[in-house]
Length: 264
Length: 324
Image (cartoon, rainbow over all chains, first blue to last red; front, side, top):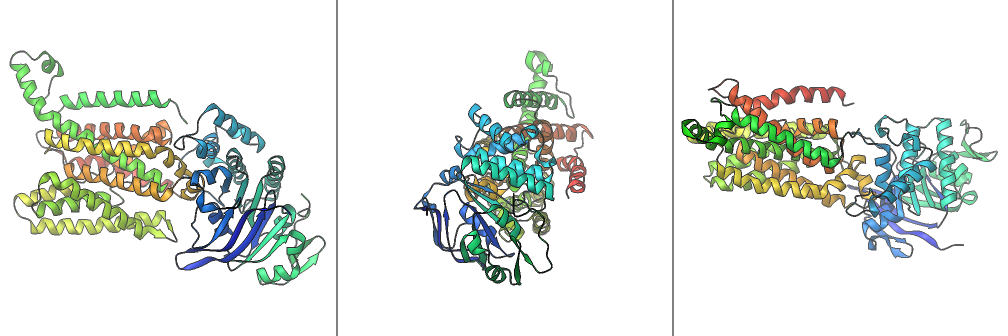
């Protein structure tokens, strides 16, 4: 077993008075694709925000590469950990290329990133995510699937070794969902990034993840290899509804898993 | 989306401002010939110089006040990711007016009024932001409603002060409420200049960080920006600029809303260009509006705020219709 790249120890976080993470323990090995699974309000997105340093923890600690995450300067963290938020509401026009160039900001002097090298990296990332043709388009005018891929390209341009993806396929139709996951899988394999994907879709965890972190009420109730965590008993506890094994996937009774979701 | 580079765009903006300044300088109750002023011989030259000495401070004050308000509006729009942000609509100007009027009522020196206006503007910004905050984030609808509440409250305070004051003091109150450039003096121009410069320098320093706010505060934080610090710096700079403008010219609305929109449509949303261009365009707009206010009904004057509101209110309505 490889040493953990990220380790959370009794991690807590809160929005106002209500706790969102409540003593969470987790350990993420380098190079893994980890599905962070749990019902609404179980603390999944909060965990990503704390790891991305968007939200400060209220207790516990995070070790990154063996050192407390808070010891790293913010910009140094941003060079190693990329965060792709769930949905982004763009108000003002912004060219897709400029959006992807934002991924270079942690490297630039005073957050300005427009050197030829930055542009090359951004173009390269857009090519890898099949969005190079959109470079001069306004990101506001893109479809949901295109926009997710542009944001994935931004994370790629950031050259971080960890990607934190919050519900990356929410709201995508089956074709765009599959296209996005194929792109994600390909760039993950090429770059050997560690990926944390927050989702409440069990099918997505089955399709994509090598290990699973199962959350309930701000704590990890099970973690480890996918096959060990995704048992009917664990899922029943996490989601508060009975599950049964059916073929290779899991389904709530009466729910039908989309065909092919277990093999990507 | 971006027609010009940053350098040429700034040069074009500066040229526009120079042209507007020259035109506004000659327009007014009495026409001032720039030719007579430069040639300067005989009676015509003397008259021209006298007029120039009266008019120059006013034109320059209009330019500085316009630059302050447009800069504050542009920075707030970028920070809050909200096209409706404006120091007037968010209650910052009202807070500044109450601060300055309070100082005048207490008999403080006119030179201290920017400090009081700044305090009022900062208090208003903080209060409106606190009202609009929900679940840790600033909500767009709540922000505008909070601005409305703040403006209603500040109007009440100003009206009360107006009815309590008498004679000269009540005229002063009216000045804060309506906004006016008619009391311009070289001293005021000199006193306002450092505020504009300081605000511009601070905001230009934050411009690259503000660009990352275009995708949202969380996104900027995840890219390594200390967002709390950036918010504090930009809010303070916007309050300082608004406070300074209001202290010397009263409440003039909509400049901070109007100008960044026009500039954005022409030059894109890169704050490193948008902020300085907004300063130039805001100066040009207010100088032009002031020239219209002096010339339209000469020798009577239209209130400057009436002209900016006549331009700004339709834009505001249009933005409201477009915002989902």
